[in-house]
Image (cartoon, rainbow, N blue to C red; front, side):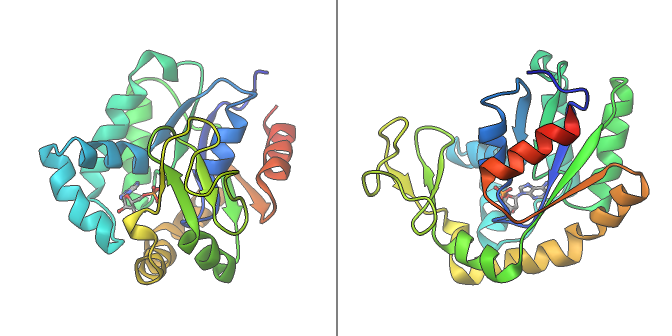
Length: 217
Ligand code: AMP
């Protein structure tokens, strides 16, 4: 399937389902998936200089400096697979990042076509974050309560071990939600003013994807 609106931003609090919805959408639509959280976790795992510096910030639930994240996104957007469309998952997260993104897109004569805002109540976000499980081998995301794997601790798709992200503890989850409210929420109005915002109220991933496909076709 091809979309008319194909350069997308997924905006939403931690735990809103940006990653899960991206993975499901990508089964029917070919887009490059750019998750700044995943890019940063790869740097942390590879113990690069950037990764070592980012690890401490990520563990505290705070945001990695705008220029660093924007630089990673700029480099990723220049890759060939982004030409046919992309999902920016978890970026931008500040107004400054939105400006840096605009500049990067302008340089490659591109633009954002739609910003999908996944709105989920805070109580549910905390429940989801603190019971989330991620796969070590692939991008799969599970949830102990809402979407458990068939075999405890094992990925249905690739058989690798599942783990809880260190920043998904109750304390860090709460501070990440505070960071979202203070630094990222202003982007909702920013993109609404530009007539790009498409809000989807909390529901399951399949319904969210169906609603998105209807609006982005
Ligand atoms: P995520 O996987 O999107 O929940 O991101 C995990 C962590 O990576 C965040 O809590 C931040 O510390 C960092 N991070 C991810 N994306 C960004 C971004 N756009 N700006 C700054 N920090 C980010």
